[in-house]
Length: 76
Image (cartoon, rainbow, N blue to C red; front, side, top):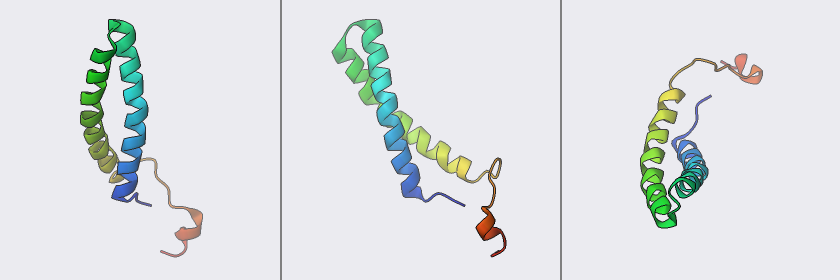
């Protein structure tokens, strides 16, 4: 079983949305400056989404921890 590229992109976007909100909240709590927290979040959303996509695609090539579903075992 292999994920399609669009699935990796969708997962990256949804994960980074949650992660960016977390980063901005932490930055705001530490600095007390909302504008600074938003600017940190704006930069990291793109860098981490890019990194996650390639990390996901790399893991898609590794067989570690993957199993073939029973329905397709006999169709190979």
